[in-house]
Image: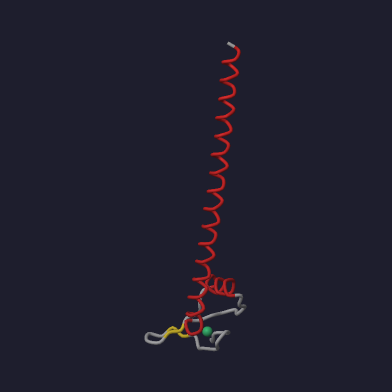
Length: 100
Ligand SMILES: [Zn+2]
């Protein structure tokens, strides 16, 4: 059996082994790096996997930053609303006061 990407022999020896990557890892590499190979192995995949992981982490970080930004925005909106309610309450209080 050989890796379809690089043609290296897949072997599971005691001293020398070359394993195919699992389906999940192959998908990760293909998704992150825009590749289309059906298999990767230890011989051809380790650099690709490193790059894919970095790309994946960067995207994750970007998402987290975006979420943080969104949360900060909604906090600002919430504060604005509280301010508005406060204003409204003050108006009600002063209306009461005027009635007396
Ligand atoms: Zn390979």
